[in-house]
Length: 119
Image (cartoon, rainbow, N blue to C red; front, top):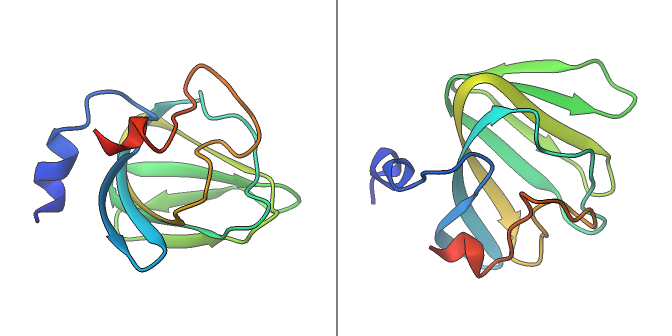
């Protein structure tokens, strides 16, 4: 598998694509541009972000904002309120437990089910 080729299949921003699974984890790729992701949390799951290209603004409640750049990795611990955004297109890899909901308990027009992430 080539991650860049998998990213080429991602047409919409904020629409993760499951590329494989490892034990109880999904490995996903996504493109981010704009500020559409709402503040949310994953009550029972940590969430790993790896920046493939571009820059991502990581906002974590009660912490200074972080500008993540190509090659950076960050884990948002379970139960921590967070959101991400990017002024320009940013490509990311996510590693999440298979039960992780895309935008936590928050439902918006960008929320994707696991079925919708399996395109």
